[in-house]
Image 1 (spheres, rainbow, N blue to C red):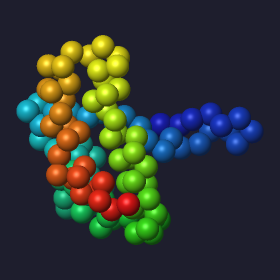
Image 2: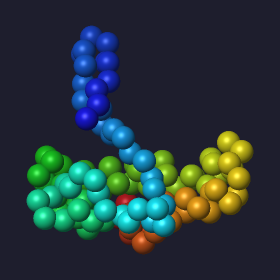
Image 3: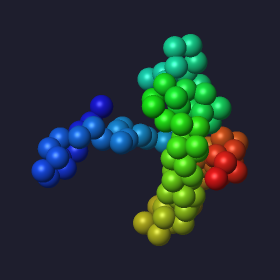
Image 4: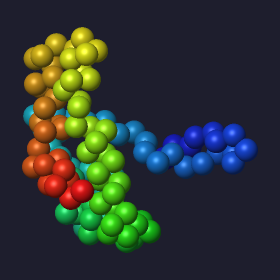
Length: 108
């Protein structure tokens, strides 16, 4: 877990910490830290099924997913703009362009 210093509010829990996309050719899409007791698969269905456990309504969970989709969608353009080689961008594509991203894109 990570913390952020928030001025007068002091230290607060970081909303995200240590998120690193990894190509499936390097590592399968399995979570290092499970978000449910039995399943470590990284999937939108799993995220939505445990949202209430994390005090998120289904609608709020979908809204958060929409924020993530909006932030991640231009990843190829951003990477190219930073001078990352096309071959390297393609190597990372399986980490970011997959069925769950498509599914999350349709939730909003």
